[in-house]
Image 1: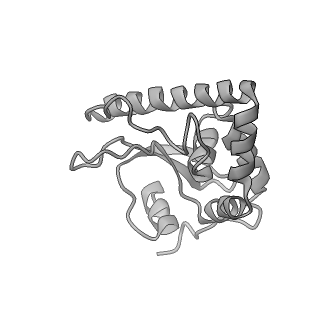
Image 2: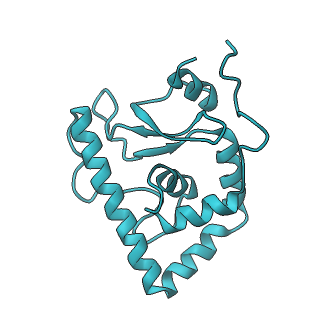
Length: 165
């Protein structure tokens, strides 16, 4: 089964604007894909890294429901070093998204387009932050913390059966 077919099974729908697998779960299946910054019809699609593994998504959703974003937002407000690191993550995301647009042969998104997850000032979506950190290890301090807090979502084996029709 192709990576795209695995991602389709993970999402329960055809993936949009996928360029490549950006990270693989320890089980070997994709868990993060890199998407083009524009859909085939030209519509902006600012989410460069997309978490696809349903177990990872569920683990991160539990963290969001448990208030981790609020805790992170509070830490961000009071920690200048964390703010600088989060701003660096934002800049990394924008640079990589522009690079992906050029590689995909699509128009860059306009300056000022949001990056992901609320960066650089807010903590809005842990899924996007975790996907960024998994795709680019060491890039996103809050994504790293959330990925660690999510625990080993892969331990019970693959989230989908890659050989099944």
